[in-house]
Length: 637
Image 1: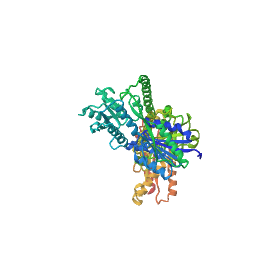
Image 2: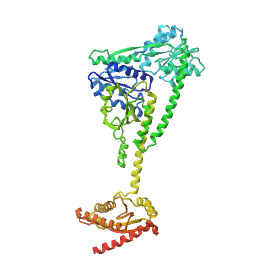
Image 3: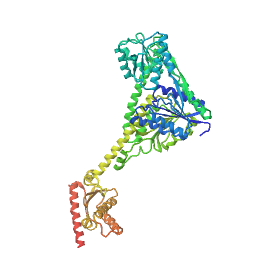
C-alpha cells in the first residue's frame, strides 16, 4: 500500500435514499483531491427494525477489514441500529482509527452536525413576518426523537418571541411519514380550535402527505392553508405547489469530514464537533409567489421518462427472474445473469459467494446437518462467480475474504473506490457484490431490487438442489438394499424392465443368475449375526465386483441374490459363474475366518422372444440354483 495514500471506509445504510445519493457522490468527487481511496460499505436497509432481513443486510459491515483502513466516515443517522454503529466505532477505537460521524453525535468520534434549529426558525419567522400568520400548527416526528424535539422547540421559541401563545392542540406527531400524518390532519380538521392558517411539518415527507390529505378534504394549498416542510428532498422541491422547506449542505458536510480526517492523519488537534448551516428554501406552499411553469413542464417530461424507464426495468427483472430460476445448476444461473450485467450499474464488479454455498450435498445426513446451519457473516474464503474488469469478463476464482476483492491494491491504483453491497435471503448470508462506484451510472433503487432478485434466485437454486438430493437419496434407499448397496427386489425390476425390452427388440441373450449364500444359518448360530452380515456383504461385493457395471445385481432378501443382464454368448454366463467362485475362494484364503463363504448359483441364458418372461427366467435360474445347492450339500456329507 502506498504510504501517501489513505484508505477510508464510508459506512452508510438505507442507501437508496436521496440523502445518501448526495453524500456518496460528494465523497466520490472529493476522493482524488484528498488522495483518499474509498471503500464504501453500504446496506440497502436502514436496519431500523433489525429483524431477519436487517440482520442479513448488516453483515456487510462485518466484511470491513480494519487492518486496511486509515479512517472511517460513518453516516450515523442513516444507520438506525445502535449496536451495529457501536461495533464499528469500538473496533475502530481499539485500533486507533479516527471515525467521523455525520448527522448523529457519537461520543469519542469527530462529529459533524447540521444546524437544523436556525433553519426551522427561519421558516416559521417567514410565515409570521412575511405572511402575518398567527394560527400556526406543527406536525412533529416522533416523541423523544432528537430531530423532532429540536424542531418542535424551535417552533415554540419563535411563537413565544412573537407573542403567539403555544397551544398544545395545535401540535401533533406524524412519525416522519405519511400514515400517521393523515391522523394528525384529521385531528386538526376536527379540532375545536380555529382552523390553522399554516401547518409547519418537521420533515418534507410529512409536508407532502399533509398537502395530499388537505387537498382531498377540499383545502387549497396555499390559498386556504399554507404548508411547509424540512430537509429539501426532491419530492418536496418538485411538488405542486413547491414546498417551502430547508436544505442542508451535504456536500459541505462531506468536505468537512475529509478535512477532519486529513488533519487527523497529519497529527493535528481537531475539534470534536463541527457544524454545517442549513438554509431556508422559499417555495409556493407558504403563500409566496413563485413561477414554476417552466420547471414543472420539465418535471412532467422527466416523470414520464422515469416511469417508462422503471416499467422497462420491471419487465427486464421479470424476464431475468424467469431465466435465473429455470436452471438445474448454479452455473446456469451465472451464465444467464450475464445477459443482465448492465443492471450492476458498473463496468467493474465482482459477484462474490461464500465458500461452500455452491457445494452440492449428496448424502442425506449431510443435507440434514446443513439444514440446521445458519450462514451468518462471511466465510474465510470467497468465490468470485461472475466478474467484469472495465467491461471485460474475467474467469472464476477464489480469494481470502480479508482481501475484499482479488488484487484490491491493483484496482485502487486505477480507481478511487470500491463499493460493497450485501447478497442475502433474510438473515442467511449468500455473499456480496463489490463494484467500482460511478455516480453517473449508479441507480441505487434499481440496484436494490436487482440484487434481491439475484439473492432469491441463488437461494431458490440451492433449495431446489437440496430437495433433489433428498429425493435422490430417498429414491436410492427405496430401491437399494442398505446392507450390501445392491438393488433390492423393487429396484431390480425397475432397472431390468428396460434391459428385458431391449433384449426382446434386438433378439439378444438375457442372462439371469440366482445366487444363494451357503451355510448362513450355521455362521449366524456359531459366530453371531455380525459374521452372518459379513458373509452376506461378501457375496454382494463378489457379485458387484465381477459384474463391473455390466449386469444388475440385487439382494432379494436374506441370503438370496439375483443377477441379470445382456450377454453376447452363453460362454459369458459360464465365465461369470467361475469368476464368482474365484472371488470367494480368494476371500476365504485371506480372511482369517474359521468358516468358508460360498454360494450356490443357477444361471440361464436365452432370448426373451422365445416366450420366456422375466419372472420365468428367474424361476428357471432358481431351479438350477437349487440343483447346485443339492450338489453342495452332497459334497459336505
